[in-house]
Image 1 (spheres, rainbow, N blue to C red):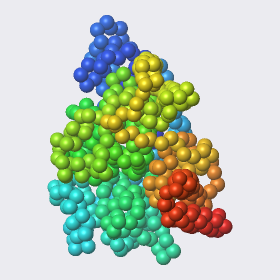
Image 2 (tube, helix red, strand yellow):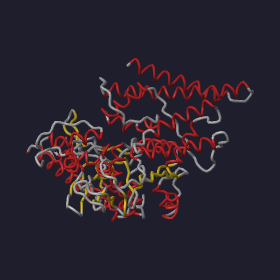
Image 3 (cartoon, rainbow, N blue to C red):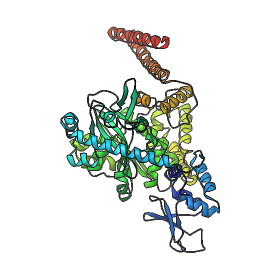
Image 4 (cartoon, one colour):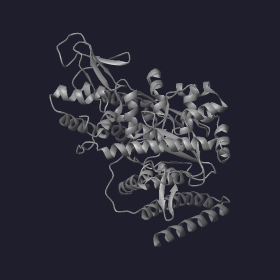
Length: 538
């Protein structure tokens, strides 16, 4: 087994909880940090079979059997290694690759990758404290980062020149390109990160595998990440998890925030169990990884519209991972602030109050439903019921799903005919705004061209699309892909303008003095149409 490529088996261990795999054959009860049951490998009446979800292994104190999800599947089903992998791949819903030994060339390639990225990290760290990095250093100090924090998280500065390309000029270009640090242009190699505050991204073993660079001049996007490489996949990497893993175990929960700075500040100010996704999109892989550490998750997002949409998306993604021992909650930082600002202006106690008063998932989903459907009408209630059922059907635990359904049935009976908007919550979630064809096209574009996903992240997030769907096969080059996104953005802007025009027209007919507003709207409509026509004719 040692000769096989471990990438796929590691992915299985990441996506599948050992509690779920073992629990299919052995009734388990949680006691303390472990789960216990009667060993399936020898006869016993008193449970001595222990399963540790965080570490991913089982151990029987009676007969000494020990292993992970693969060995358990092999032994319990009396099958071979490959057959066990096939069964686990089917459970995880991922395609089984053809196995082949990891070549010496591949091993060397991975070693070169880590060496190059480590050297780049050290170079960026040094530059941050040199005159070139003064602006970046001043910025991060103003954000409340001490030199100790900068050292711990290995922050750095990428200068405006091609420092990395020149540093590794004698290296074969393919080796440097494979790290995502440089790209090949018309005039040779150039640095991908320039004039950026650099946040190293670590894998589970504490090795730097990629970077997230923040702009210092206010340009958009604020953050750019290393494009996916052989050893780095953004959709499967959680920022700060290497630092938070033990704290998640001790706190019996994880806290998910929106950005790197928020995560670091939370970890450094009393919430070491905090992590963040890379970019705006939370994925099923992120949730699967977190659930392996602990199934209690608090999503802490900004209280603006984008933050609430991110929360609604998180709610949708987490449903299949719910178990009877899950405690999933949602906390919002309101007033145009984020966790970083709350900690600096109001202190740890204020942040703790926000976390402690977080809303349970069962209540959050109920609030979303009531906000987005007119439940005072039969048609609205029918739509709301379908929406709730669509969400609860994703819960794989049959008993837990039944409990959710019973809870919502009770609430529907008692509340929907007299429901009033809550004045305590500010849930404003919009439903998807595009048709299925457009959604599939955007899924293809964001998967094929991650740089476009980064560039138009704010607009794509506003569409409330689930980008975790299967990627369709399409023939769209990068130029046409960007034209597609821009044209869609213009169309959405025109829809907004036309809606505003109808509202202003009603006021105009009522005798209000809104001619200036009407003229402005008309000029904006004409300008947007001209841009759209120009784009289509290109």
